[in-house]
Length: 482
Image 1: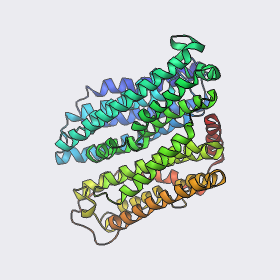
Image 2 (image 1 turned 135 degrees about the horizontal axis):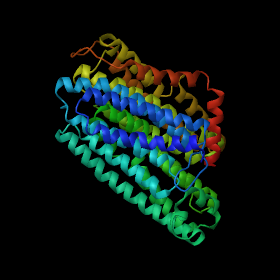
Image 3 (image 1 turned 45 degrees about the vertical axis):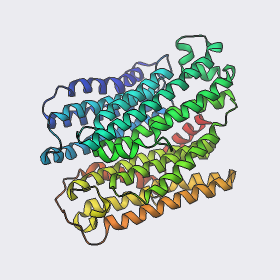
Image 4 (image 1 turned 60 degrees about the vertical axis):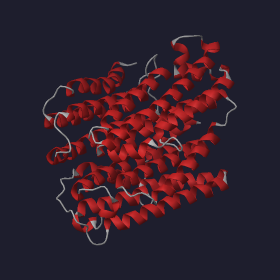
């Protein structure tokens, strides 16, 4: 590695690690919120350096055209969420829902989560990647239960138990891949490195790879919110603080799917017999249809958008399953646009719940009249997440459906029906939430406008005219996926 590139990789890990230790001992929540945002800003700046100084792979770290996209998205959403978090947490302190001493844990665990996700993304080692996902999971488990209410504690325990089952299955799948590599690469670290595994992919034991991928799909699929392993996600969103909902939907689900994609690349290179793409298509469509139906039955605004996240993870998983240059490109673009849009929606929803004093959909209406900024940004966010033009998700879904029609028309019809089913539910909820007579509970909102407008502006800009550099970047990453 060059000096600048190596320093940037280390910085993406050292900054959140140092901030985590520091924030655990900062008594002032206001100072802690500023330090949290400052550390997150420094982390995304370090990730941006890797765009211009790409390190050569070594035994521990790997930065290529695929994970740099995830790393930058991780840093950007992590930073903007930390800005939103400051105003959100201030309101929670003022209303007594949170005590100041809780926030040392909150801010320290926020940086621990960023550390875990970044570690999973830049690791060149299967075991280290697994450890990073587990660290991110455990830190978010602690933040989900921070309100200390019975419902929050129950959601935290459910997340812990289901997440632990998922990560245990992913660990078993990782061990099977290691065993498949031993005859060709020997024991030790060499059989755990992505670069070495890809170079010797044809020599790996295909039977062990096949079985290992099934466990990995179920294990990391639990983290990604795929049906039927999704049950932790709606509870975690509904009962945890809204900034955590934003990073869960916008980041952690992506990191789990990234881990799965690395193994899919390995199977494609080794010509293993299991149909990894077909499995992902099946899980993706099942997830899409289940979430679309459940959107009609939600009574809690944060649960509503939690199921919307499950829906989009189904679409993204299907895109990577169908594969090909356009399918993979659509999956990457959908992932980026969903992260930006869904986090913006949760920014708005968090302040809506504070202003209205409730998360019940039946008790929230007329937001465009009572809280124009929040109401109209929520309208824009729902239009974007539903796939309406001119937002970026329309572009990615259009690419995916047209690509699928060319290769598997029946699957394209099913995909389109699932998307339309979810679209109807979101349009129905948007009408009730944002229009009509304002509901009671019209407290003023101190919403942080910058993160909301930045995310929606980026999604709108990509939808109007996909920049050439972004297309080339994602096309290169799509080629790595095969």
